[in-house]
Length: 127
Figure 1 (tube, rainbow, N blue to C red):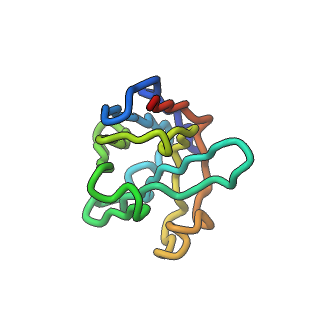
Figure 2 (figure 1 turned 135 degrees about the horizontal axis):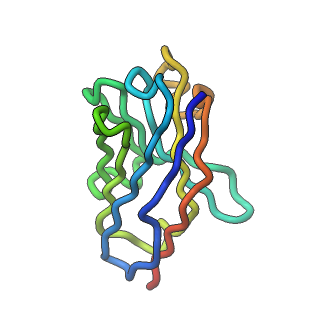
Figure 3 (figure 1 turned 120 degrees about the horizontal axis):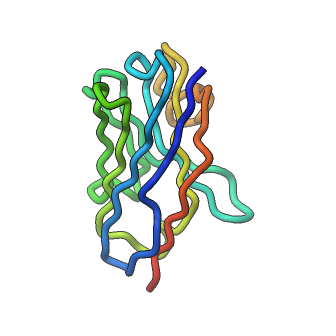
C-alpha cells in the first residue's frame, strides 16, 4: 500500500513558476516509477511527466518539455515537479501517481501502469 500526498499548487501569473511535491508513504516507493498527471473539468486525465525509480530516465508530455522538470529524492520518499514558464493552459488539478514495478514505457505514458493516485493539487495560471 502506498499513500501519496501532493502539495505546492496555487495561483500564479502566466510566466511564473511553481514546484509541486508528492510525499509517499509505503515501502515500495524507491522501486517504483513515479509520475504526474493533470485533469481539467470535462476532460480525461492527461499524462504530464514521469521518472523511473533510479531517476535515470524521465518522460514528458510534449507541450511541457523544456518548461517542466521532474525529479525525485528516494531518501525523502518525495517526487517533485518544477514548473516554469507556466501558461493558462497548464491550469488543472495535478495528480501524483505511483507505477507498478515493471511498467513499460507505454504503461507510463498511458497511465495503465499506475497503481496508486494522490488526491490532487490545484494549479491555476492567470493570464
